[in-house]
Length: 355
Image (cartoon, rainbow, N blue to C red; front, side, top):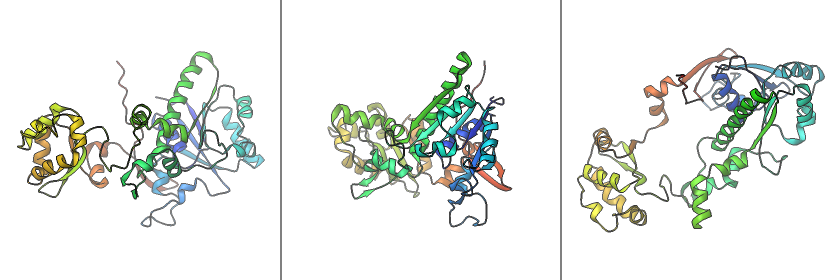
């Protein structure tokens, strides 16, 4: 689809490389420039204890580096800089994530890049919007933008999200900006500089929790899997077989359907549970009522019954169970990097079918 596009990527870790892989999956030629002096992208060394310590790649590194060419350069070296510049003048897109103070050292100043290639779309990721020289890591942004304060089970047992969500949010934001800039270039012939900060991407991702505060003054608290506005939504129950389910009941009609499946048709008539706002106020008592009914039911049988009743629910799966589904298996991408077999999940979940 994008076989005529050339993308250079000097960015390391996750957000920038995820953007590069997005374009690689769509057929672009993506050349990943890795720092020769430091031994390449730092995530090559971010290995689990069970991984081969002698392997030149890690599972983490492999997750966002499918379909790329790898080129080791020292951009502070004149000869290597010339190699980079020769690639840059032919490139359509450049993805960077260096600190502002390093721009001149690496030859990545906006004016210099624009002079070399006026049609270049330069996508840049920075950490903090107004602190361009402050190093930023996902967990720090999760903390500073409110995510950690809302995650976990209570104020003494907070948790971080188990993926680098802020990096992912920033990657999606910058992908959209780059694609829009390419669309604009087709009409004007002019390149563009597109940037996003992890901080702003994180804040943008707060969506309904931000509005809960901005409109109602509600400061989100750790609720585990629960939803602050809806019940039963996020409640987890254990079935007779030992398997667990999670509910996502968003309407009174769905709640009535749930109660019918569970053989508790009287619950919607209880004043504590009649409306969603009542269920949110009495969610613990509601969970006790639902839990006692669910405990005696087989998980798979119950999920089929809930599906037939149009009640949103799902099995609580471990990651190995999730990756064993037919859909997940169809999204696995395999390749060799530096002679080592690697596997990861596809980054693009959309499909385009021309009419």
